[in-house]
Length: 286
Image 1: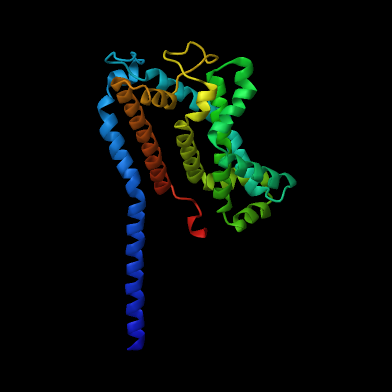
Image 2: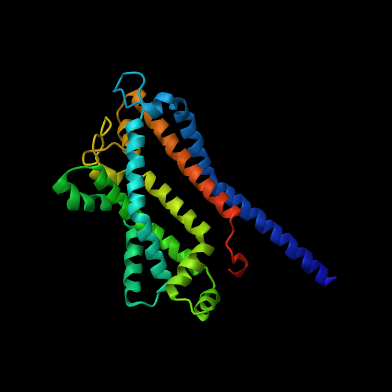
């Protein structure tokens, strides 16, 4: 009788705690849903064909869009990814697989420091390093985004590779494979879905950065003719138009904010779907 009562108490207590966790999780997500609904309500009406194909028409003039900002952001984020993704993955591999190397502690400290550094500081650093000598440009903006991207990918890649059981590494080494082959042919293929998810989420992280671009690419009301001149970006245009005081520009700023939130939501959803479809090869070993 006592055992059955104790069993009933444990089951009831477990259900109450699960319900409490669910309610607290729901409460934590309410601000996001409220923000998403508010931005959707304000910005969805600004989304049309002109929004993606035309440049801003100017204060008080109906029409126009943010095509130059969308294109500029795509170019700078693309350049940052092409230059930064390999370095970020290599950094994560080194920190995970060569954790006892003399440089590992120093690199891990630098990565942790870089991840916690405000993005505006990185923008000021690139301004003093490049912009003060060569002027505002898409190259400088991409460089700032790349410096934000590398430590984030490195940190996520390190944590993901640490999830691989050690006996899988030892099995590959026992077969006579060099360590670099174990990494390239066993570890990375087995965690490629999670590594890809970390990369995608890192891209979503830098896509909405405003502060570093104010100091590097500056902005442009037109399409840039060269990557070596001031270049428009969507986050900077949202920032500028939101404080303009003109209703038509503020509406486009809300439209840009809605576009950014939709992009981040799509990236997160597709990443979770990818992880669900392609599970790790040794999931049950974790």
